[in-house]
Image 1 (spheres, rainbow, N blue to C red):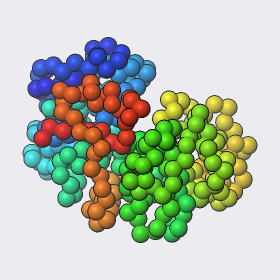
Image 2: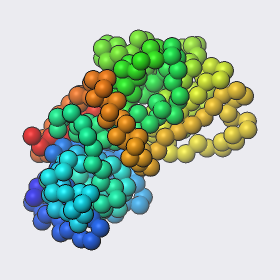
Image 3: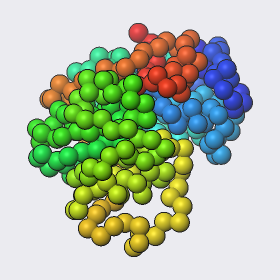
Image 4: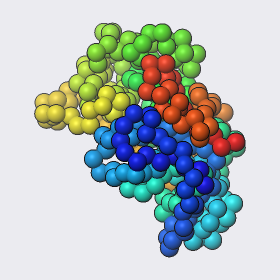
Length: 318
């Protein structure tokens, strides 16, 4: 099979398309024939050597959409069944989805019902599950003023698409570091766009709910812009800072404001299928913003790392 192998950490040049053996099936695992997968910033961090637990060589890829090729669970995962998988150390502890076939533990392979075509489905698993779970954690109410911090990211655009499709009439504001992307955000469904300069929002406005995808680097600034009784979901880590330094909940979480989060590695199958049902029922636009082929993996990483990137980037095998 064709696979993208990373033998050592580095820039996108270390992504090597090679011929390698199709994985051998083993007890408790099944092989997925890959139809497509999304590119995630965490994979760029791993490629660069910023994931201490990852050993090289490795095939990256933390999400996949495809069909069962070989199975050790004929009842639940029959050959030909449409499935997805996300997280669970795929592409970190064991080889991931940057390949034509991927071997995955059965307990992290999820059968789903959806009307989506393969290209659109490839944009959904990790990105939309993160956005959907995060918005659920915010307990959105009719007429809420919602701020999506990191709005031009894949999860940010997904959150806009999901929130604007809600029947709760959410007022969406999105942030960007580059105001050249303002029209893209407005076109995606944001009503307003705020500049995020040096990790500080260039506005005095406050919001009922904030989805902060930048992470620990902006959490204190986000609290400043959270209204009384508001909820802040700190979900992403786009700011390349993994921990909140010198954080004391008593002093750092303002009175009458609430902090929550969402971890996509904790997969709830009911929530996952609920997301696909919501997408189908509300005709949510999940079309990827950029599509590449496997032999364009370097270009895909370079695009996602660039100032031009916007929304979800996928690799399609169609």
